[in-house]
Length: 330
Image 1 (tube, rainbow, N blue to C red):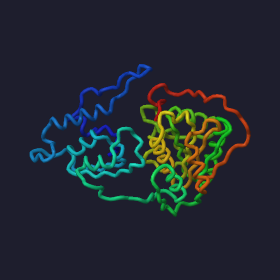
Image 2 (tube, rainbow, N blue to C red):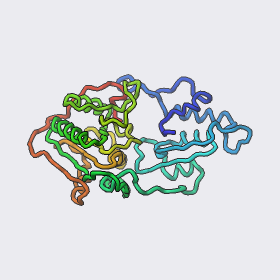
Image 3 (spheres, rainbow, N blue to C red):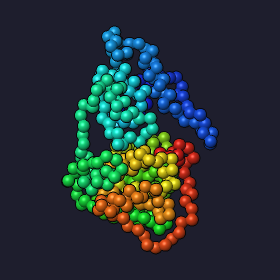
Image 4 (tube, rainbow, N blue to C red):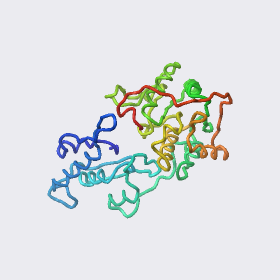
């Protein structure tokens, strides 16, 4: 069961009627209030009485639940699971918590009635040592043990001279990786970037698959295809590629997140790769965290390439994109 699921098994018997919605935003749009949905389901379960802990008259709805990415579940979600299942196992990594309101490890232990975690998986089995070293600059130390990753290459950060230069170079890298039969993922900060980058790569002759919902026109990805997949950081959770490309590392696109949460986003993006990571930014618009990348380069864990051609960037590009939640941050 994924953390952000709507618990469809539980909604029907203990639903909250019509789905509650948030207050309208500045554009007059409101969205499903998933926090209120979870609270409503939890209240329904508690009101049923027969699903309370220690109640022997009624059986829980589920025999067993396995949760991945448990760090992104909130207290209400854990309350639902504890009341609705006989047994609950949770896998979590606090270093990759990117949704707001997620429980900390001590809170998870409290929800599960444990005094300590049952086990700890320290090694990053999917990541090569090169990927793990770079990821370690944005969280606790990773130990990459995927020594079978072929054609290992030091991660690279490209500092473009302009917005067009960044997209031109991104397209060139994708063509090169396709010739090497590498499966690539492109991870961008915002959903607006997703549509914009996909469109501009198409104009450069590079087809990409957009990881968006079916109701927005998306289709399931073909993981056997060499067509690159583009996704936001949140939608990329759980995905793995030979190579990951992280363009648009500019302060303007990360202005809504900073500090530890920003570092966790970057860590999640980097660790989607098994073999190689390519990052890019634009001179004059770089992330404020660029000093971390420069420190990694100073220690030999990142290669930084800068376009020496001077091309001043006067303003951030204005891109067209859907004017609903798909165009909002993550």
